[in-house]
Image 1: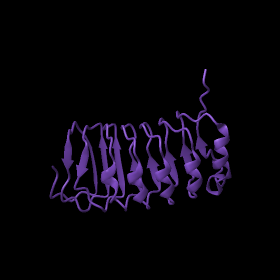
Image 2: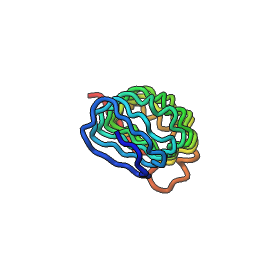
Image 3: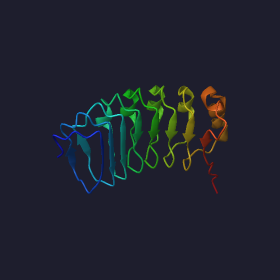
Image 4: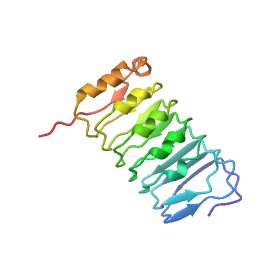
Length: 177
């Protein structure tokens, strides 16, 4: 348990297990947790603007529902299957859900401020949900289950993606042998 500390940025890599509580870190703006084993974090300040949880075998992100000030959320290399909790995070600009087991990305349609989206190594077959995301600038879709290249016309038609001069989306199409 961490309490009575006046940190703005906190990073830790440790073998935390079970449920973890962070109390009284009211000024905390950035939290990075790596290679941990826990089921839930409690007591995180709602002033948090950046959160990274990677390699922690996190399966539920329901605790994120009230973090409306988050601008950057990185949850790669976990075991997340349900992303409905992020639909309330309207301030998100940068989201990384790479290397999880997510199939349904429709809840992301509500994230109208999202500019950067990383969805590498999931189980995505259909990318129509991206057509609702008007401010996207970069999309990463490498190592998914997308086989119909025609779906990428959604990205090509996107006004925000067409404005860029450098590559705007990254993907590989796997063909069945």
